[in-house]
Image 1: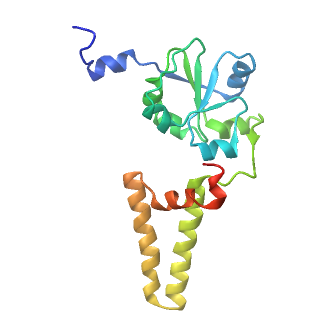
Image 2: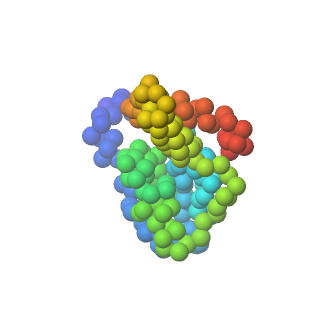
Image 3: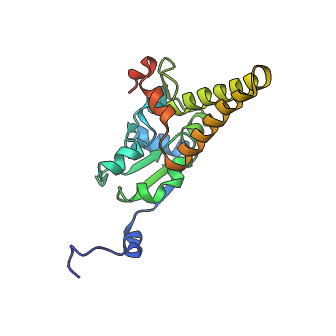
Length: 190
């Protein structure tokens, strides 16, 4: 078939690179010897707060939106905070790289657990999703306390926030995160 013909899904999968798990110590050795490039797929606010020295920030959302191919001369390793994001997106990440390609087993948390240093900026705002969790949780607790002490109608405040979280989880769009992102303390990170 001509090269412009669309490839079937099984054919595409068979040509995709598999990401090989790599432990923190092995990754550290490869980084020191400049054998690979480390790509952190977390969002910019998470990366600004703490990351592995020398890592390149390339959020998964930007990687896909920009149709970036990372097929170069240097192998690539991906990381996130716990390893869950990279593991759940292995196929998507592998589609952008050549071989060999790695994923840090356990993410940034395993890196720190191995006693390896990170570059942290504690003055950077908390990650937006942590701010959402703190804000939403505080409003739910306040609604429950107000419903118990002032008026039962305040339970609707907690219900509204709960419904918003369900909507955010099912659609991927979080109004509270959008609102928090434009707050003065977060503008620098954005």
